[in-house]
Image (tube, rainbow, N blue to C red):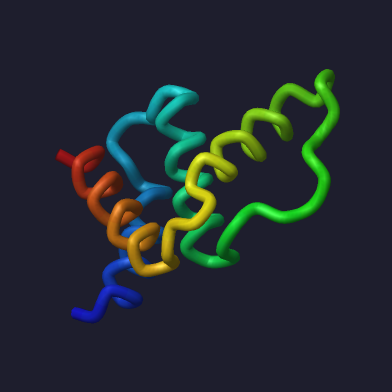
Length: 84
């Protein structure tokens, strides 16, 4: 399978994990997905009192500069680890 096919498969499998991951892991899944599909974070950083949006933005920003392929591979690896 190509990396894009593996990634697409992992995205589908992420919705069927045996247990719901903790919030920090959910943020990592989200941020790797966004980096893989959209590239570096863009737009204004959310306000201090929008806690969820701020956490998502910050998590995504941590991957700034990471290539889409690297983000896809890290996403696939993380989902595979969570399935075990």
